[in-house]
Image (cartoon, rainbow, N blue to C red; front, top):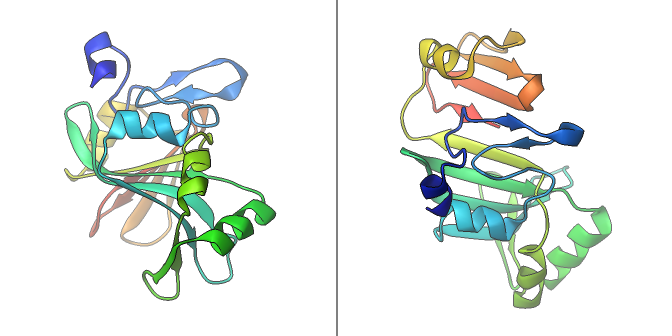
Length: 178
């Protein structure tokens, strides 16, 4: 990975706050970096589609089954927020529609739309590390959160608004950094 060799921040806790409220994480800048740049960072094991849950707008997403963040591996998802009319256009031109969990639909993009999609900036990065995190690791690597919210007896959110980061600690599942 070129970013690792150049010393650029690639680990999940290496977050740089930039001008105008942007942050750099994984050597990517949500809101400015494109899906193509995410692919260059996370690797070629990806799938791009419009994902539409029932009663929700949906979004253009790139899912990386195997993503590397420095020496940490996991899964990654980057999302592009698009206007409803553009989402509808991509769904209408899709070459394949599949059902995912429950009634969520995944629309495989038309090749012409895929070329366009790769140039779009994404707004959200979600990373699910392969290794389990615990409270101690989160506090050591990310510092004291601005707020901690327990949503269930098994799930707690560590909020770092200065970095635009929400870490979900799941006592029985996988942790999520987004």
